[in-house]
Image (cartoon, rainbow, N blue to C red):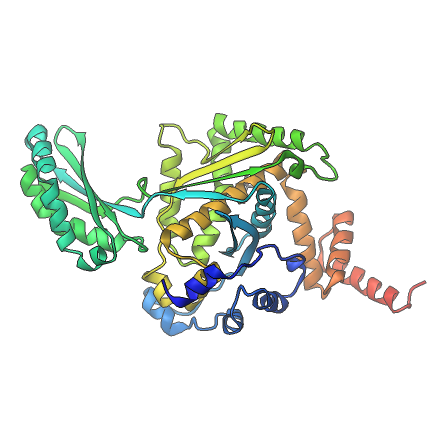
Length: 441
Ligand code: MEV
């Protein structure tokens, strides 16, 4: 672990930053510096795309013609395994960051998020076709597993030196002449796609020979079900009450009804899970991870029992509290790829104090449980549009030139009128400014 990581783990900081959302990006960066979440030079570098230029982009993908940006934000109020964390999010959809921060605050009332994660196992598949005798092939492959694992390890001395390496060889039957061999590899802080793909290609001829058949595809599986993360949280029912919904127990029960809806209906389950992935993906994008791989794995995992189901579950705890859990495969990386080439990704990982791939997976899962909770609470009480429209109103007010407390005042008037046009925001702003100057009686 490098010095920065050790330092960031030792400093006690609060992830609750009151009024943060009302400040300018400049002021927010200053607060992160004041509260020791960001070093001054990193705060400066967060402006624009500092450090990420065409030469970085040009080594990442092909045919680069420019750069493409997304907002980088931080979700607040996260306490994960007892530690306050800021959660970086890069996302185009309004209200996801607010939703994550809001639910994280509710969960902090119950002690925050508890994460348990599998070791970082990535799995390669080798398809074996035209196998003459499945029984003989399976027996042979299983008997040779120790030597095949040793061969695999000899092909990755660097990974073995870092504590990773091939852990298990599994043989699965697909049809009367097809087998698939799974090679499970601990890839430490890497997602390990390139590594296990190379291993699969290198070992395939030997596997084909042992099976008496021929090798077909050699590629990792994105159903990383040996690399799962489980996150739990509880919210005292009192914390669920609001001015309009005073009975927290009734809000909890409405959330449980929403959960039941997702359990009964695939059309709802997929939207429910979209709300989970809102949080997970935003963290993965900020941290330069392969969110498509995680998406594919998450949805396959959701359908593992033959029916597509919600990835989270919510239930009533012994003290009447709302309890929730999210479990999903989450293959992350904090080395190589964008973590090596993209300075913005490096800053996001540093800001979040990420100690490795497993830690990042836990943070992303906590964000997913949080965005799901926020969505279920909003949907089962006020409806989702109220929060969306008030965020929209704030944005229209700011774009019309309002700043400081005027943003809230103009946004509140736009929301009351249910008119969100920029011209109306400008009119309201001009009137309020004039009134304050005493020009209005
Ligand atoms: C919108 O991005 C996500 C929601 O549709 C999730 C849900 O319905 O649970 C609000």
